[in-house]
Image 1 (tube, rainbow, N blue to C red):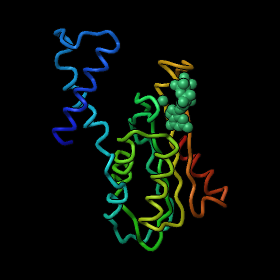
Image 2: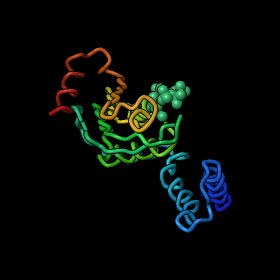
Image 3: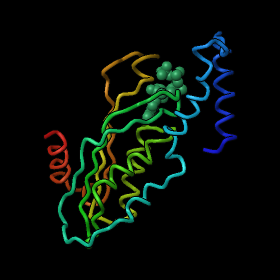
Image 4: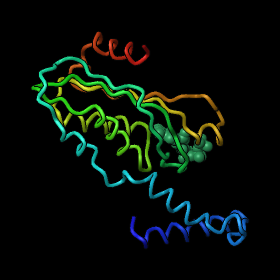
Length: 188
Ligand SMILES: Nc1nc2c(ncn2[C@@H]2O[C@H](COP(=O)(O)OP(=O)(O)OP(=O)(O)O)[C@@H](O)[C@H]2O)c(=O)[nH]1
Ligand SMILES: [Zn+2]
């Protein structure tokens, strides 16, 4: 992030601290605006990242069977309240024409998409569409499960509640058995 953007965040944090009735000049808070600016640089670092960039690493492997990377942990920021939501993403696809990507690239795509102000639904569909368009596989299925701090520490206050979203593309749409296989393997 550019220096001027960091300064803007620092100013904004100072204003928020004042607005809630705090003294931004007391010792414990003196470095807080700078820390928050650094933290936002990190947690919003995916804002201008295209997840498809990660799928450029392709191996010509003749495997037209299921690939599933599950339990990919992620942390994101709810775009309504700017508080975290976090959980696990599971990504399944059936490659076509030898287009198999590196396993870590699936996790990198999750990072890119999660590190911006987000909705869980958008994380889920963005990953699915990006994989679909880049590798042109037979099918893609993305399942995301997460806990939203805006629903636990405030508001409706329902700690432990989980939101599950899925995005299904290609052969998975009409093949119930294939979908069930993925869901069984995710739970396994
Ligand atoms: N669909 C969706 N909603 C989300 C997500 N993250 C947070 N929300 C919801 O966004 C909604 C915002 O509702 P508003 O009524 O505008 O805001 P609010 O008054 O703070 O709502 P409460 O959380 O119910 O107190 C809430 O229902 C949140 O639970 C998400 O990833 N997807
Ligand atoms: Zn929220």
